[in-house]
Length: 369
Ligand SMILES: *Cc1c(COP(=O)(O)O)cnc(C)c1O
Image (tube, rainbow, N blue to C red; front, side, top):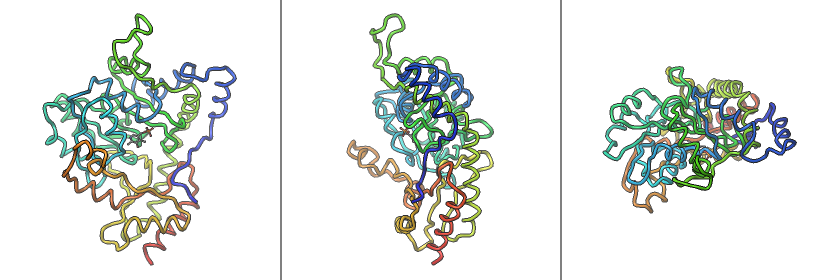
């Protein structure tokens, strides 16, 4: 089976992990934490990095650090991974949904303003599958309506918008280091920001909100979202290679696109001229006009030893939110379509050229039969 993604640990990962164990620094203090946080934040053109246990907790920390909670609303794309919406719920605030833009599958900036109310506090754009969101119109809206911007950059580590790196485009951003992300710590995440006040609040909340004056005195409800030194050791070794990883994923995507270009009935991922796409997952649509439906296509690939994944199910179609009497009857046609037609192909950083060729030949055989 060619897996949809595998971790790739080619550098100093093992050496640094051994160092943690030899030195006995295996918990959430130690030299790798500080070094990983600083270097990762700097990679994202930010001064502050606060490491966490996952991308989901990094998102929650970001929302909480901005003081968003009960009664507040945060605008997100309906087409995203559930963590984006869950992170808002954890604070007591409510997500408000916006449809996708048909070419990039990202939040449609033109549909944001109609969703702003007096309770709106932030917009959380998500750089879907590695293609950065068109941020300038969103930054303008945020300026005009006095809203925060939180980037969900979990899928776009290393990607650029108009030559600015993801993570630096709003007030703060969240990254994930789950095994299939651009760099991994097994599980883990990081919030980054260039704002000292936001960073200070995040730093406190992430570690139980102990009071600075007196430990075990609390003026806030804090979380334990602390990353371990062992995870940071892996993360640091991965970060040393991130530029290579980005180029490898881009090269894999170029190969896929050149081999699939002529195949009828599928739509390939794009790269707008204002971005550098990292192609976190090489994602395609089975177009309406083709007689084969997406799920049948995926089954046939599986029979040939090729693992794939469907696109996300939009948030407005999730039973968990309907149970909360939310999003019922709402309709977002672009997101609904791509959710039905989309899938992603094996996309691990270290996937072999022959594997991509096999996947593409198999796709041709299936669709051109
Ligand atoms: C992976 C991902 C997350 C969550 O990250 P975890 O580390 O799995 O908690 C959040 N948002 C998006 C868009 C993601 O792809």
